[in-house]
Length: 551
Image (cartoon, rainbow, N blue to C red; front, side, top):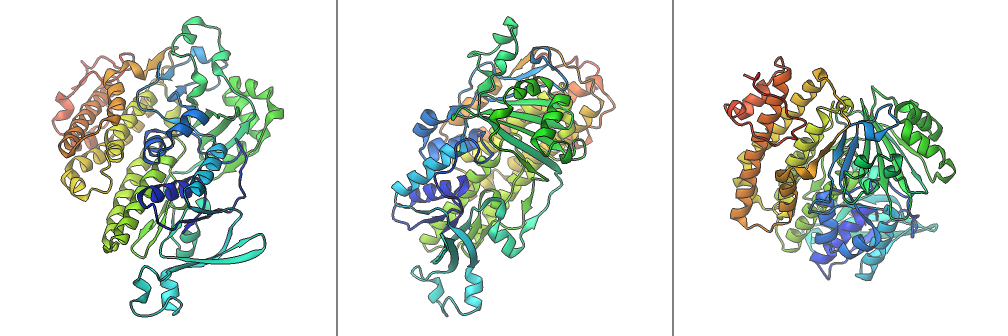
């Protein structure tokens, strides 16, 4: 049984159905369906793991191509206080890269997922409000789940859920119980699993019932010709300044999602926690967007403010046959859109645990190991955000960070998912040295780039840094679609490790050329002598500086 029929719960149900055609699956969803288009839920932008999960693992490519928008990558403008996007630094790709991702109208998508699930024999109960539930441990302790070995047989229910639908109570029991209830966190609350993290940021967002096409914001022919096709509006566009970024995400329903994500210390939530305050904030920080929105005030569809959105969790998978997925477990940050990725990863682990359970294998050891992997991915990704938001106002360092972060993401985490190695304990054990090194290097690089940004000149030249012009970068994206055997996977991960080491050295030496006082001790602790001898030409030429001054 799955408590929660949003993106996490419905995608898990479909993954389970694909793996187990005869398994009885029930999804309880609080909201009535169909849900509204556009102004339904935030989390519209997907990246490569989530996109691959939806289009290939779940087999939903036709829906994505026909009813959602193909995303034109991430795009950044360092436009704090500016009326002119064509006069500031732009970071993005001039063309589509090989591996697709999508902009998701969550209303359209979740309505489709629910209907598709039902067509596959999944019992989807909408308007079902969970009023109480008892986990197997509770029922066994109270004698409510039988005695002896009976509770361990497949025909003996273990967990019990009571839900209200239309004023009538219903009771269901099941061997497995998965919490996909989002921030309600039903199991998390019951078992006191909530865990804070160090990332203190807030967000507001709203939807406008019209397209926002930033290509119309300039008549400069050179600027307009930088992208082929010239459809910047299809990107997840980031308008950046110190301590914040504002998003623009198009939806296939014709609406546009607009949001602000900000460091709580630099931009308190009280300065933007209503539409009127958000508009005042935009006028002060992103005046060109404010001017665009002024003419669309009457098309406002919703408004939400969320304080300290990031959090962890003490447990997500249990040998007692319960699990958490999606925002019921952990949530990192909207930047880089990792929400769907972590749904894909959690659901893959849960599906494998169910498979082992159905095969009669003991699952507690696997639950512990999968949870350790999951939390290691969570912790390493969290370093991308914690204390990093001041860097959004830095046109010199943030583009370098984005290239690093993408390389780490495509080269390590994406490889594990795309190559179906998440649950391969043998391969994970054999590649432990490479995985540990890349995680340690990422942690050191995040700290180094933060220190570099504190002293950088923050030059904001009116040019485009084209990610598609970096052949190695485009190839890293294309290579996600390769199908590798064990030997090929190991070779790929080792090559990525070497590439990350070379990129780290180049970044450090680039920074040191202008700022020799920067501390590279943590990077040296990981790279050793490679820091001084491993400088390639991986960064944009416009970013690279003369390294002759570096020792």
